[in-house]
Amino acid sequence: MATPLPTNPWSSLMRSSALVLALKVAGALGGYAFVWVAVRQFGAEGYGRFELAFTFLSLLSVVAKWGFEGVLLRELPVQSPESNKALTRGVLAFSGGLAALLMLLLYALRHLIATFFNEPGLADDLTWISLALVPWTLFQVWAEHLRAREQWIGYGLLQSSVLLGITAIFMAVYPSAKEGSPSLFVYAVVALALFFWLPDFLRSDRRVGKPVSIREGLQALKPLRSVATSMFLTGTLFMVMTWSDTLMVGYFLDTESVGLYRVAFKIATLITFAQFAVNAQIAPQISAAWKANDQVGLQANVHRVALLNAALGLPAFIVLTGWGDFFLSFFSENSSEILAQTGLLRILCVGQIVNALCGPVMYLLNMTGHEGSARNTMLLAVLVNIVANAGLIPSLGLEGAAWATTLTMSLWNIWALVAVYRKTGIRTLLFWR
View (cartoon, rainbow, N blue to C red):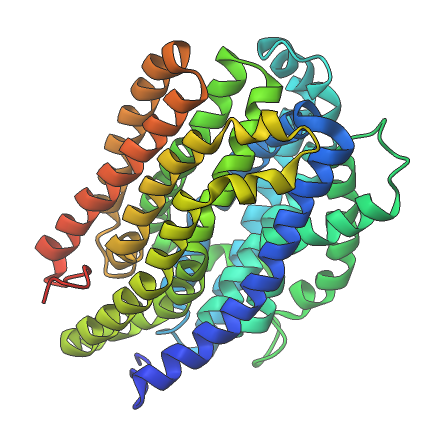
């Protein structure tokens, strides 16, 4: 039976979003602290190598999950506890096993990848990142399980920014380890975190009724393979689009340029800072409302989300485009090097504000059974993104990558916004009533 929308939606939205936002604030502060410590201890070049390695971690974890984390988010709010138990166990087993195989593949290819990017030191980063792949994937699956059950504290604690924030503390405590890399510290924190969360993974099937075997869990995945594959293709395309600029900056330029670009990109994402918390809260409600055929309630909830996104995103956009140099100056002792990226930051901010104002368009497509449309949207975006990066980076450098990212982000958000309205009748823009 579908979960009904709350009787006081504004109160529910604000309360749960505020909790996620508080955790997001704490995690993001840690994430920015990680960038600050990494750049100052290892330089823009060392941080750039980490970002290249982290790109492989992000992409391979999407492959390992194969879209089943999206299935968890969509199905858990509307299925019985017994079905939820089997589904969760199956996704953990499948994703963990596939992540182990991808870990071995990445480890075997680490030197070849380093040669491709003409960065011999990248091989060391890839070594530690490959070892972190399995726990990283399990954390992401479990986070979606907790999100679907609206357990916001656990969900917030498992965000990557929180783990990176803890890593920043370790790097600050051991500043003498400059001969290492940020990737080594990330692996150490992820390995320690696995011991903390492992009991929850193992007990996930004992909270309701009798235990579920791994075989039973995998059987529960079979009817959902088609849906998961569509979500996987969407997720993979989204990650390729998200990280292709980083990879192509590393290929056409160098790892120092990667570091500078990622610093500016991280600052620009402050515009969508609150959007993460607001959209995280509404995702399970979209699925429940759609299953209950409550389009009026869903439209009202989406409008509330649009209002919050605009109220929080527009002031951040104004501040970052007007005083971007102030924020950039925090991340390097070589202020002239970082401050030269002010124009780059402003370009990236344009794409982020479009993303914030368009609303939770991809969630609406995936949670309402239109994952095929979401996949096609991402396919178009990836093609545009790769062509734009390949054409603009050699001629415009980092600003070329920023223009390619902003163009692509604006394109897929507007394209998806129109698709949401055509498929569901839901309007996501604040002023579109």
